[in-house]
Image 1 (spheres, rainbow, N blue to C red):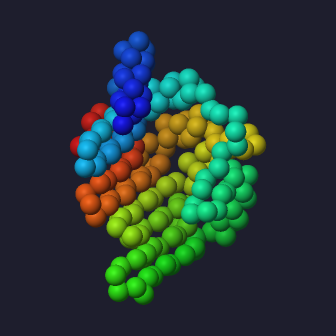
Image 2: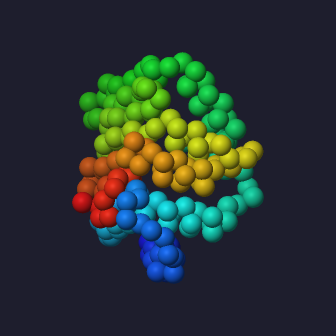
Length: 185
């Protein structure tokens, strides 16, 4: 949590030193609410763009780990290209037959958007992300994401970029979205 607070302070310092015109720009909102902390970040996209250029990424390949499986960025690109080539379709429907709950998830690709909705374990999931945003993220070199292109795409798309909302049954929530409001109301 202290690392998050330091990041927020860096964002505030940079914004104080910046002379960006922010009047009509899109804003990136991140809201994390758990048992111990509540964090709200309201960041003009143009400021996020400046901050991303300051972030040094590791030379190590970026890997996403799901359970015990690792997926590299080149593998993600390959998967994404196949998904896009198929047009709109239902990628997966997962229904648990367990009496004690389980996973009930729908994963769809519609109109160049990745839609993931349902419940897994003790979390509700509602994710709606533009394919153009995923394209931008995966446009990095070799084994890396392209965060700068992702921010540029967020800037262009604004509210059409999509959102992520994950809510745990224990009350913990994580939300990420873009809109034209300066506060996360």
